[in-house]
Length: 227
Ligand code: ZN
Image 1 (cartoon, rainbow, N blue to C red):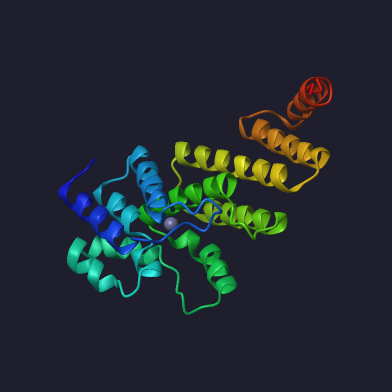
Image 2 (cartoon, helix red, strand yellow):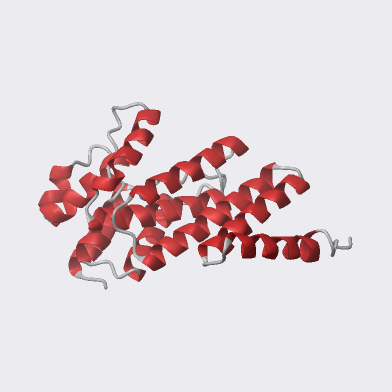
C-alpha cells in the first residue's frame, strides 16, 4: 500500500531525520531503520494509519522541534495518537524510560503494538548486524532481554510478526556471543538458542534435549573445520 498520505509521511520523516545515522558501528542512515519498520508493518498487513505511524514513529522523540500537533495537522489525530503511544518522554532518565516501556506495553492499542513489535525487530537486527561500537557483551545481552520483555508484554502480536521477532532475538544472541565470547562459550550460547527454537516449534523438552545432544555430537564437536 502506498497512498498519498503514506507518501507524505515518508517525505516528512525523511526530512525530519535527514543527516541522522544509526547507533551501530556501520553508521547507516537512520532512514534505513524507518524503511525496515515500514516494510515489516506492511508485510503483516498494516493499514494506512499504521504505515504512516511506522514512518513517523521516531520523529517527535528524535527530531525536535517536531510535535504531536505538527503530526496531527499534517496526518490527522489517529496517526498522531499512534505515534504518541510510541514516543518516550525524553525528559526522563534512560533507565526510567526503558522501565516504562515494559510497564506500558500491555496498554498499547493494536496499531501501536504492531509498530512497536516491528520497531524492536528492526533494532535487534541492527544489534546483530552492526552493534554500537562501545557496547560490551553484557550491554548487548541486556538490550536483547529488555526488547524481548517489552514485546512479550504487548497485547497484539500477529503470529508471523512474533515468529520473525524471535528469529531476530536468536540472531542477536548468537551474533553477540560470536563477537564477544571465546569459541566454546559461544557454542554453548548457540546450543541454548537452538534448544529454545526446538521448544518454540513444538518439541517436548525431552525431544529438544535429544536433538541438542545429536546436534552437538554431529556438527559442533565431531566435524572440526579444517584450516
Ligand atoms: Zn524506531
